[in-house]
Each structure stands twice: as structure tokens, then as C-alpha cells.
Picture 1 (cartoon, rainbow, N blue to C red):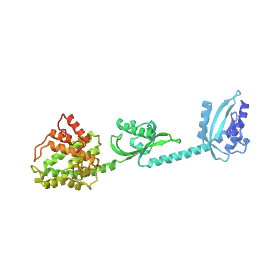
Picture 2: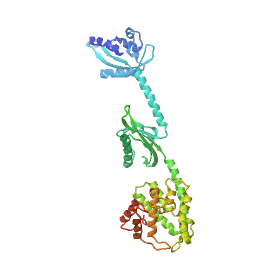
Picture 3: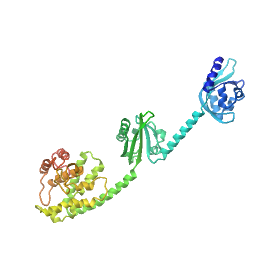
Picture 4: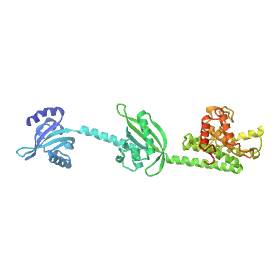
Length: 449
């Protein structure tokens, strides 16, 4: 055993590892050391080390006590990291691996190795500083930031994320969106993460509403990007989510004010011409039903409904004796009627809406073959919203009573749409209308809705 220890000294010196054999009882002293141990501790020779007590090398009393406790309890210590004092009393990070040996004479020894891990600790400290700097940067960005692995498990979050879910950061790591959000909402979030990871494509500026753990809703804008390792392999995703609730509420309030103002004009139209007002409400209902069948979101549905309610607002400036004249209109009178489109457009064209309200109304008398007015637009140059309004307008006008004629009925209206399908009217929208009528047993579907 003794020879093996000596044989390893040269190898240890080559590796820069300190070797030692230390007597704990009956006397405390180094019995064997190598040159590398002297170098590690800043002593000129091995002999100088033998004058030093092992206890005196520990910079911290608590570390010494812990080291000896583990050694006596387990009989060995593995890679015990601590600070030693050099000859000049400078701190040195070392790792001690040692075994406790009791001889037949009941003498107690410690044999082991000491490695200088100062450079390793310096790298650790620098890495820790970098991590602290990065975490500090993330925590001071006023957005929710999170990192996920390929299984969509959260591996890191910033302070704003933790505040949002009401947990500490270490309580969030390892969890998924399913732990914090309703199932359907979390499922969509994780589908976005999977898309980013599998395709390598980013999702930028996606607007969505989220239900928070406290039961409140907010509106956010989210960007998700793939995360790569050093060899270019995608290892997860990073997300940045900004709360836009306050901005969205302001926009909603602004839009609500505009709609209320236009509603006042609609009320004025109702007082002046109840028939036109009833017509616009029915057109709005038809158009909204079509939009729902097409899978439109709530914002777009609001736009088409509002367009339906306001599409004849320009008639408020047309004399009633022309508007409600029984019988056929003269060319001049009909031109007055046609002006309602331009009048309404001029009224709302400078008001900003999150949907093409003014243009939808401006085009609702256009036809696919160019036979409409006022611009004689053709085909795809006509907005989808305007095509829906056009069909809704014809359907409602033909099926309801007017002061100047009796209602023509649903059969006549569907014949008109079928006859003009593909030439004047959009085929896909006409099909939706017919499906809605069929589901209502061949009757009008918009009065009840």
C-alpha cells in the first residue's frame, strides 16, 4: 500500500494534483506530500508543507468542521470544495478527496488528493455573473418571457411571468401551459410551440386573449422563435408576450364611442323612415349570419354587422316623396336614390375602423359583372364584405313589404339570387344563404336572429 502511494506521486505531479498522507492521531502532521501540493499552496518545497497543520489550511472554520464530520461518519470524503489559505494567506479554491485509515496500532490517518479548482471556480463565478446579468435583464423587460424545451416544458421564465401566474420561478420550471391555462387555450399555445420547433419558423405578433389564473381576461401580442444549440439543432422555443389589455380597452372604448355616434344617426333615420331602418337591421342580421358561417372572428363580424346597419344611412338626405314613392321612379329620381351610397361613404370615410367599413358600404351595390354602381367594379375587386351586403340587401328587400309595393316573397328572392349566381352575385355566398334557409325549413332565418 505504501509503495503504491509513492509510485503515484510522480504521476500526480505530472497532473498538478496534490497528494498527502496526514496523521490525525496520536499527532497531527503531514507525513507525506508531493511537490504539486506545495505549488498549489504556495510553499517552496514539500518540506515546508510538513510544518503546517491540516486544520490551519481551512479558511472557514465551518468548512473544517463539516469536512471532519463527513470523514469520521463515512470514512471518506469525495470532492469536498472549500477555501484553503496559501502561504501568503491568500484564499485558494480546492477540492479534497480523502479516506480515513485506522492502523492496527490504532493510529488514525487521512490519505487523499487536493486539486486546485480556482480556475474552475472563476469560470463558475463568471458564468454565474453572466446568468445573473441575463436574468436581471429579462426581469427588467416589461414583457412576459419564457423558454421551453422540445416537450413544451418551461425551463426558464422572467419575473413578469412568475408574477402573472402567482408563483416563484422555481415552482414554474418543468410545468407546461396546461398547468396555468384552460385546456383549449393551453392546447392552442402548445400547438404554436410545436409549429415553431418542428418547422423552425417564428410566429410574430400573434394577438390573442388569455384567461389568467385569477379569472380575468387580458389581450396580448405574442412572438415565438425557435432556440438552437451550438450545432444548430432546435432544442426548444422562446416566447415573448406583451400585455395589450389597456391599449385594447382604449381602442374598444374609442370604437364604442364611434359606433354610438353612428347609432344616433341610425336612430334619426328610424324616426324619419321606419321602413329603411327595419331593412338595415334585417340586412345586418343576414350579413352577420353569413359571416358566422364563414368562420369569421368577432372583430370581422362586428364590421359586417355595422356595415349592414349603416349601409343605407345615406338615404337620410333623400326626400321622402322620392324614397317612398309608389310606382316606378323616373331616371332623375333613381339617380337621387343611387346617391345614398356616395353620401354614406362621404359621411364615414375619414373615420378609422379596424375593418373596411366605409369601402364595404361604398361597394354594396356593385355586381361581379360590372353592372353595379357607383364604380362599376368587377369580380375580385369587390370586397367580400360588400358581396355579402349586396346579396343580403337583395334578399331582404325582396322578401319584405315596402310602401311602394308588396313583399315579393322568399321564392322570388331565391330565384333572383340563383339566376344571378356567378354573374352578379358571389356563388359561395349564395350557397351559404341557401344552406341557412334550408336549415330553417325553407323560411327566412334573419327575423328571429
